Length: 456
Image 1 (cartoon, helix red, strand yellow):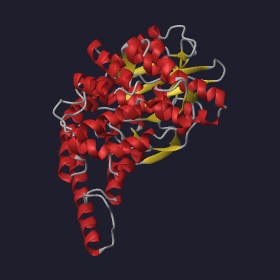
Image 2 (image 1 turned 90 degrees about the horizontal axis):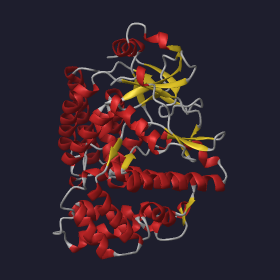
Image 3 (image 1 turned 90 degrees about the vertical axis):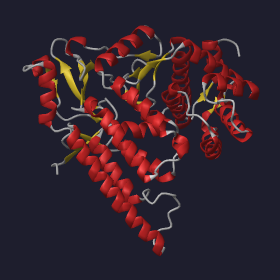
Image 4 (image 1 turned 30 degrees about the vertical axis):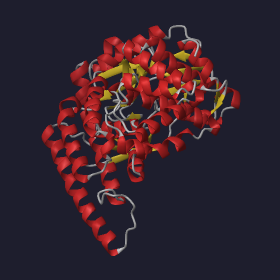
């Protein structure tokens, strides 16, 4: 229906070095009617795919192990193509499902999320120009001595362009929001909810309604670039003169609710850090985890997007550069106190403490079966393992595998969805753990926790 073109570019980083992935140009469907049309087409396509899978299973052609005939290779391709084009709530819900951990998802759905993360569409030049004209005025290009019309990144909410500020010759990263994202949030989520329920794609224990509620709240935060600019400035204050981290400057006079103009960070994405020496990898992993703990227990304000391409390492300054603050959020004192007590209990191997504070925070109701309670406590003790030893070697961790074995029990027997705050929090913490594991970092986790939260 729409003419597409493709260009090799980085879909996730704001950096001179390109990570080759394919960005495809396609018009962003920006009205409820046009988006409903796309969802309707997707529903029909999934139905056809399910019918085909039913025939294959009946004739022995397919030996798929999934319970739903909707989960098959053809439908995964349909979903990847459609979600990449729709963006907005469609991609966000996929992220929210991964927040609860890919270990909770059937294998094909985990594959779907990974494929969607590796693909993206960007809006054509005329659509981008229209937004810039509306937000910054007829002569918007005069603000820049250079502006690259081809984006260097494209994600669920918007796309990023490189530019240079005319007045100061400062290199910039300009984030431009897709049109119609905010207006379509509720209708998109309603359509997605119907698709997921009808197709029986997810286990009941994932509590879809609560996931959608949290996704809506986070989407409203992330689509407000004025709020994001304020979050960037707050982190600048919190990390002022920090010896390990740098936060970009916001160009407030050129930033609006749909356009965010920031100083461009010139380090290299941490995806390259796997090639660094062991000492530097240890240092980076320790600094990232230390920042997570400070955000949670000291600042009580966290940037919750764990994508490790949101972290750059600058070899000249020897500092980690931070970007993308749209998912930043605060936590109240009661939540933080209970969460800290859970973590301290886990670090001491205190099963009763883990169970008690899990009830206080809302993970458990107090009416769970012993099977569920034990599985939940076992998962906490496993996740708290890095904080039990003086130095934890993430290259040898088996946390993911052991937690995976507990997931089916918890999905089957849990009586309540997890606390809303933990969707994004656990995504960030698990992302920090994964980063340390990929770097093979050896981290003094217990010491870091005690520095931030006091003696355990």
